[in-house]
Image 1 (cartoon, helix red, strand yellow):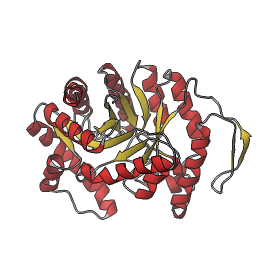
Image 2 (cartoon, helix red, strand yellow; image 1 turned 30 degrees about the vertical axis):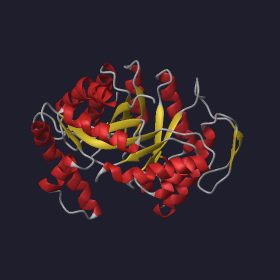
Image 3 (spheres, helix red, strand yellow; image 1 turned 45 degrees about the vertical axis):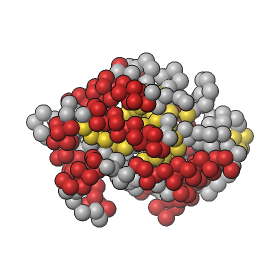
Length: 342
């Protein structure tokens, strides 16, 4: 069995400076690049950057940020977390990531999803009423593109292609392409239908509740005659020297982020009890290195995953704390996980 890959994800949350005021998005982007460079130096396997189109996140063009990180790193794999394919053009997405792959000497990946926010749809002129059709058709086209053969395709969401090649090609192999899923059976089966790896976004509740989706995915691959594919998990977390320190430092900024998003979606404000419940039994990997490592191992064994990505940024949580968390994740958590996994 291959070793569990361990990565980091960030959405480029707009963070607070030393004076407590929010930084300019431009500075946040520069800080994210430094965070990716640190992750590479620590031997972390993957660094993912999300795409958003709203004021509380600085990164709307993850491929550009990934290219900057690629130019300053040597080994870490680089990808999106996620790319909102529904409101983008599959050809341009492929071209941008094949360019990152060239810059990084073959280290690029892409995680395709529908996105948990909808701001990109009106921004780029897409109807939310076409939410399902947009993703279904564009994923079909993207799956054809990664074959790197001349593509003939016809749909209703963009112009048709007839025996069309797309450049630049991937230099060696193919572009590793995951499908990001938040927890619907239809999305799981869709990933299996195209024979693409599955990335589960588990942001609340006990991770074990996703076991039926893992089983469904594996059965669907088998029934469709597709080869086995890796499964990954993306979940939030934060590492500090002790459990108490990690919870105390994360709590206020995590609550700000959670309450801001919750207000838009009709959720009640987060209380300390809910935070503690997620940290103790749910999908919040917060604590000392030993605590976080043990929780990652428990999830990995329960779900049989090939990769775990910790979403380490949380609202205005400052850059210096994020850097320290990354340092502990790479230098302490990952070796502990490797030991526990045997």
